[in-house]
Image 1 (cartoon, rainbow, N blue to C red):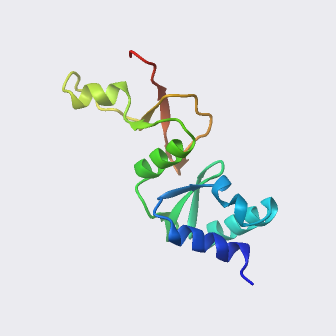
Image 2: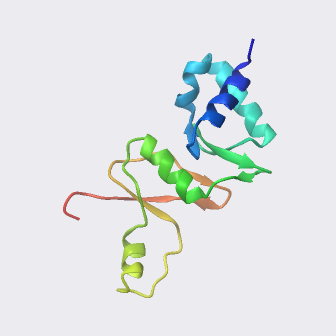
Length: 132
């Protein structure tokens, strides 16, 4: 009989996603069992917790994927329709300003409460409205 941790590892290996939400593992066992298994995987370094119920693949205590890709994937799974870069980043890329964006910003179409980040890198959200 396989443990919840083994089932979660098999799920992760079968997936091509760089990031996962805790809700994706809810069918693999009880809530407390999944939480214990995720904590064990975080302690092992296989997963890195980057937010409330959000995990990315880990390697030697660091994320195994780019945090930009992981953040976009997590926000996409939450239904926020994310795109990388905010207004300042777009203006800088278009050459309309020489001001370099200091903090990574993700443009989203709906309100996001969760903080996503690793160590000192925490993403900010800019809300996009139709016609903006």
